[in-house]
Length: 380
Ligand code: ATP
Ligand code: MG
Image (cartoon, rainbow, N blue to C red):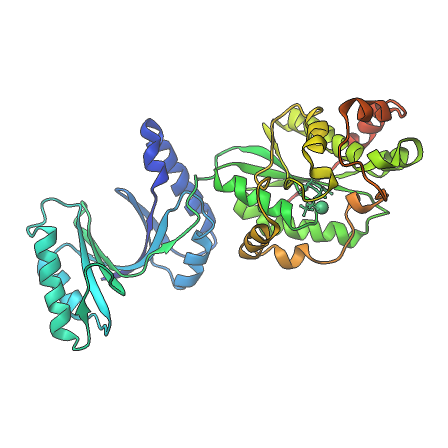
């Protein structure tokens, strides 16, 4: 008998001809996630099995963030032998309603599922005075999964994870990460759909503090494994913001800053071959997140800007931020570059033409070149 953790995946079954590729990707991602934990990982048909580990919780908590996994069960693994299965079932102690659920993937197993359910149910009843069968609404379901490879898994717990798709091989996304609550969650949401991302952060040193920068690096390291990130780009917007402040209409300050952020992101995508930009914007959350504001930012984007939180309420975002362990860091009270030179009356319905007019008041091109040339790259 072996104690194992059984991993199931479902959505990748849908991918027809790509199934093999997705399964391999998932297996590699699982191996990577568990690389620092002593254990053995094996791919059997339609299941991945982890064995020879010391700490079950450690494995399960790590696997929760490997996308493409549908559910996880701690199980015992035995040979698919009728008497042996009956023996293990006879050891089960329960005092609740239950049912047995035999899955006979191995069609050569000599007893049909329904008959075996009845046999095993009877064994449990005989050994547990307070247990009773409830087929429709049992408190406990004893699963007996008889696989094609001659092994049987017995388990009762099914832990559902985030599902989604396995993180891709390539870091195709560039996540704009601020120090706030939203952007780490945006990274998580896109990673759930298989988008591996690196990170871009803007600061306004010395108007923003070194602690503010450290906070965002901490956030980046917290989500690094979840989003598959390797590099973080840090770009100082100070020179640009000072010029906007001196020469341009203050009500356009945030708008101009956001257009510049996208232009810097464009340049990084060009250079390092990212294919899409991700932000934590949510419709109507602040003045810079109205349809008109998003339109003026989109106008300068060379790559698709993905905004997975666009329809999320703040409570929904906070719930995920807590699950991915970023919330407590995000709420530390350091300033962000968006709060430096914050106008008293930011424009709510900006116009592209007016934003362009404001930009024409400064030498935007050389300022952008300056900030891009001075980007710092950190390996996470
Ligand atoms: P967050 O909670 O993620 O900071 P927010 O509600 O404060 O978001 P904004 O400040 O308008 O909203 O920012 C919207 C999005 O723009 C952020 O989610 C992030 O993707 C990006 N962004 C804002 N500030 C920065 C920054 N300093 N560096 C990188 N990206 C930023
Ligand atoms: Mg912010």
